[in-house]
Length: 107
Image (tube, rainbow, N blue to C red):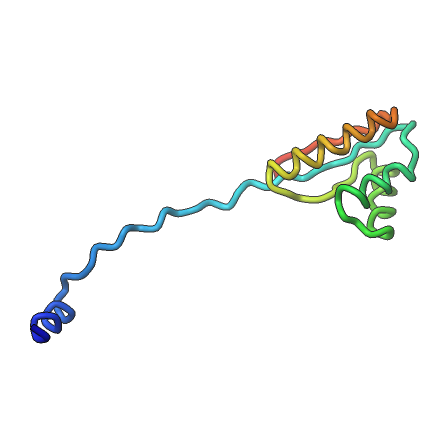
């Protein structure tokens, strides 16, 4: 019986393995803040610290980029996370009566 097992191990016939499905990396999206002339800079910094986990220095840099260049990248996330962050930012801005706009674009 051991010879039969050994014989099968040495032959070219073996177990038929299922091919693993190839998983594709999810698309990534940039979350952007757009400049306006009314939203206070402190509010923008607060948004960046709260929703995008930026420290004070990073938040200040992004806020100044938004102010000077008209747009700033808050982070890059999968679609669902980017959409959630965008919704949170827009809700807080509306709650505080600021016209701050947030958008996302595919990377």
